[in-house]
Length: 192
Image (cartoon, rainbow, N blue to C red; front, side, top):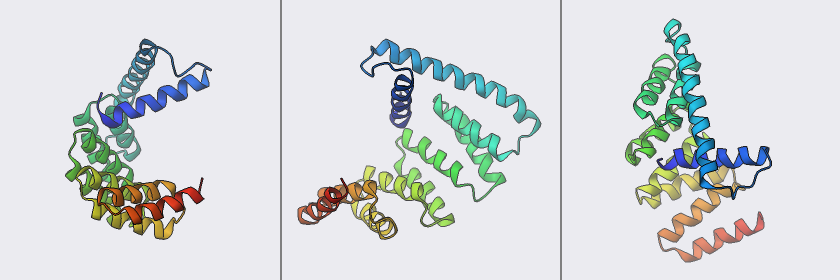
């Protein structure tokens, strides 16, 4: 499994185990079994939704959902198609653009991932996930100054956001600015 898809399944697996009272130290065969069940469910759900899609192919929610479900089972071309359809029928669709971002990062195309985030930010400049994912894409490209700028912008409106604080500290660390990184760590420590 690739990047975000693997993370998604690990998080989901941990959540499923906690609901059923099982230990997260279960064998990898148990994890595999849960993942297979999730993929089977998603595949079944796609089949059901495709019947509805035949009748209403311009349905934005349906296209968004199919985009997500195809992404979740690793069928990125199908996912991309449905997300782009959702954008075609609703040009301001941020959710679909964030889905396209996930596909791009799964394919390690961080330039395209950042481009989708720029589209999100052109619709809503302070969109939390659009900015957060943009920072991730820039950091993956080793463009720490760009990531720093976005972190500072978001911290101007969310000054106690621990995620952006940690990312800002990382940008300073990678840019070899230890004093600034230490100052940000002090802010993080206050929020513990």
